[in-house]
Amino acid sequence: MRFQDKIVLITGASSGIGEVAAHAFAGEGARVFLAARREEKGEGVAKSIRSKGGVATFFKADMQDRGQIRAMIQSCVDTYGGLDVALNNAGIEGGAFIQTHEYPVDTWDDVIAINLTGVWLCMRSQIPAMLASGGGSIVNMSSLAGVKGFGGSSAYAASKFGVEGITKAAALEYAQENIRVNSVCPAVIQTAMADRVFFSDGTQESRTQTAASHPMNRIGTPEEVVSAVLWLASDDSSFVTGESINVAGGLGA
Image (cartoon, rainbow, N blue to C red; front, side, top):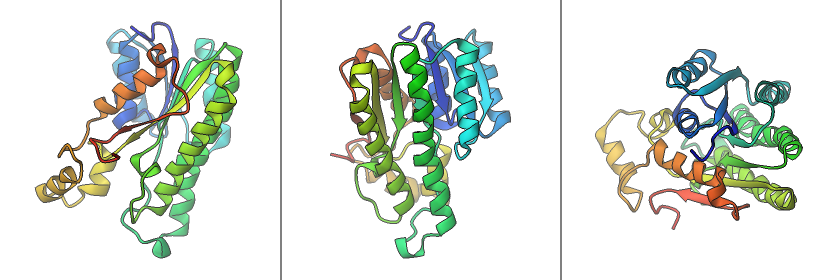
C-alpha cells in the first residue's frame, strides 16, 4: 500500500496504460482522480474502481484545452484536498509511417498540442498544487521515440523528445522543493494505440515482425509499464529525479 491516502491524478485514464495505472494506484490505497476526453469510458473506469472498494473520481477534460486542464487540477484539489502524484499519460499517435515532407500540418498541430503542450500545461498547474502541499511526484509518459530516432514519426518523435526536455528542466527547477519529475519511455505495448499503428492489417505476420524488432522478441504489456510508473511515483525512488526509464524489451540498449 505505497499510496495509502495519496492523491493521484491520471490523464488519459479511460483506456490502455492510463486505465491500468488507475486500477494499480487505487489498489495500493490511492485516491485517484481520472481525466480523459471519453466520458463514458472514463466514468466506467472510475465506477469499476469504486466497485472494488477504491476511491475514484472522473473529470472530462481535453488536453488541448488549457481552461479544462486548469479546471481539472483545481477540481482534483477541491475534491481530495491536494495533489501528491500526477501521471501525465494522455497522448495520441497522429499519423504513422509518413515521411516528414508529406506529414499533414493539421495532424502535426494536434500531436504537439496534446502530447507536448498538454503535458506542459498540466505540469504548469500541478506544480503549484504540489508546492502548496509540500511536494510530490510527477511521471510523464514519454516513449522510446522520445530518446531514439525512428523514421515516419516526425510529430510523435518531436512531441516525445519535448516531453523528455521539459521533464529534465522541471526536475532541476524543483529538486530542492521536494517535487520529483521523471518519465517512462515504452516501446511497443499491447494497447489500442499499438493496434492502430502496428497491427491494423490484423495479420499474425505484423505481430511477429514487431515482436522480433525487440531484443526480447515480444511486445510489452501495460502492466509492465505501470510497474515502472508506480516505482517512480512512490517513495521507493525517493532519490530519483530527472530520469527516463525505458520499458522497451532491450530495444533502447
